[in-house]
Image (cartoon, rainbow, N blue to C red; front, side, top):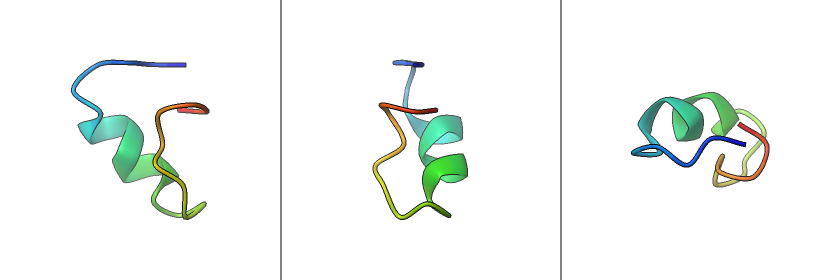
Length: 24
């Protein structure tokens, strides 16, 4: 659960197809 800039988290969740902010 990371709430930083959302750049590394979104980049990793991009594979799941989700925003990447809820399950970093």
